[in-house]
Image (cartoon, rainbow over the protein chains, first blue to last red):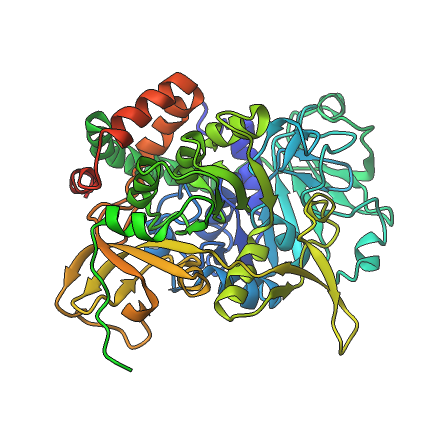
Amino acid sequence: MNPLAYTSTELMTVAAARLLSSDDVCFVGIGLPSAACNLARLTSAPGITLIYESGTIATRPTVLPLSIGDGELCETALTTVSVPEIFRYWLQGGRITVGFLGAAQIDRFANLNTTVIGSYARPSVRLPGGGGAPEIATSCGQVFIVMPQTQRTFVERLDFVTTLGHGQGGGERARLGITTRGPTKLITDLCVMEPVDATLEMVVTQMHPGVTRQQVCDATGWPVVFAARVEQTAPPSALELDALRELHRRTAVARAAADIRAAAVVAQA
Amino acid sequence: MTHRVARFRQLSDAIAECVHDGDTVALEGFTHLIPFAAGHEIIRQRRVDLTLVRMTPDLIYDQMIGAGCAARLVFSWGGNPGVGSLHRLRDAVENDWPRPLALEEHSHAAMANAYEAGAANMPLAIFRGYQGAQLPSVNPNIRQIACPFTGELLAAIPAIRPDVTVVHAQQADAEGNVLIEGVLGVQKEAVLAAQRAIATVEEVVPAFERRHPNACILPHWTLSAVCVVPGGAFPSYTLGYYARNNAFYLEWDRISRDRHQFRRWLDEQVFAASPEVFAEHARRTA
C-alpha cells in the first residue's frame, strides 16, 4: 500500500486538525472532535489548550479517551475542576475560543439535532440528547463541526433543534443576543463548508482530493451551494498521517491491554 | 453542638433507611466514581416510583430503569459513553417497557447550575443558556428571567433538591469524612443539595495521608451514612484504585439490547448478588 494512501476519515480528521492553532483554547467532544484536537496538539498546534467537559483543563492524553471523563484526561491535565465550574467560569465565562462538535443531524444553517428522530413525545429513535452542546455552541468564540456527510445526516429539516447554529440564517444569533460567531467550519469526509455570505448558509469552500461535486450533492439533503472559488484540500502529509496513526495505534494497544484485564472480570461477572 | 461521628453503615441498611418509594434520588459521578453498588442495592430492595436525577444516566440508570425502579428521569445526556445507546432507557421511552418513563430533559450546563443552586439553598439557577434551542418548548421547567440591572434575558430552571443523593469516593477517615479526588463532577453540589446523603467508599483510613489543603472533602456531618464498598464504582472507575472497565461498557450494549437477556443479567448479577461482589471486580481490574 502506498504509504500516503489514506481513508476519508483520516482526511476529515487531518482537515479538522489543521484549523486549530496553538493560541486556541478548545472545548472538545468525544469521538472525531477528540481525535482532531489531539492530532492538532501533536502536529501543528503544540501549544493548544484542550478542555473536556468533565473539568480537565489543558489535558495532554497520550491515548484517545473512550469517555469524556477517562482517568487519562485527569492524570495528564494541568488541573481538574468541578463540572459546575467548567460550565460557569470557563465556558460561560468566555474563556473558550473554539468548541468542537459532532451531531446525528445537521441542516444548511448548521443547526444540530442530537435529541430525537421523529416527534419528541413519541420518538422513533431516542438519541442521547444535548449534553454540553447547546451552551458550547453559544458561549465559545466559534464552533467547528466535524461529521461524515450522508443524506441521512445532512437533512433539509431537523426533527429537533438541540443546538443552535445560525438558526434560519443571517442575523438570528444577534437577535437572540448572542455575541459569538457560531459554526464557522463544517468539516466532512467530502468537503469543508463555511457560512461565507450574509445568509450564513453553509456553502462548500473546499473539496477533498478526488471528490466530485455530484458526490457532495448526492450526500446532502438540501440543494448544495458551492462558493464562487472552491479550494482543493491538500492531502494529508506523511507527518500528519504518521502522527494520527501512531495516536490510534497507542490507543488500540492501551485499550487491548485494559480489555484483557477487563475481559477476565466480565467473564467472572 | 455535640461532636458527631458519621455513621458507618452496611449499604443495605443505609439504602433501607434513606431511600423510599417515590423519592427524588440523585446517584452522581461524571463517568468517574459512579455508585453502581448502591444502584444495585436500590434495585434489590425493589424501590419503585423514583424520580432519578443524573446528568448522564449511564449504565447505572439504564439498569434501574430496566428494573422498573423509575417513574421519571431528569437528565442531560443519555448515552452509553463511547459505545452508543442506552437500550433500557430507549425501550422505556419508545415502548413504555417495563413501565412508562416521564422525561425532564436539560443541557449539562443547566443541570450543573441547578445542583449548585440546590447546594446554595437557592430556589432557582440562572445562567446564559438554551439560546435558540428547542428544549424550552418541551420542558416547562426551562423559563426565562430578565436581569433586573441590564434587562438581559437569561435561562432559569428550578434548583435540584434531591430527597437523597448517593456518591462513591476513594476514602473515608476514621471520623467518616469523605475524600473525593480526580474528576469531581457534581458530587459535592449534589450531596449539599440533598436532604439525605450516602457515600460509599473504597476504604477507611485512620487519617488522610498527604491531604492537600484544597482537597475536596465532604465533612462527616454532611452525610447520613458512609458505607465501605470496595469496587463500588465498577464498571466505572476510581482514580488511584482501578480503571474504567471499557469492556463491560461494550458488553452492556449486547446484554441490554434484549429484554430477556437483560432480565437474566438482573437475576444473576443483582438479585442473586450482594455488595461484596464489587470488591472482586475491582481487584481483578486493578
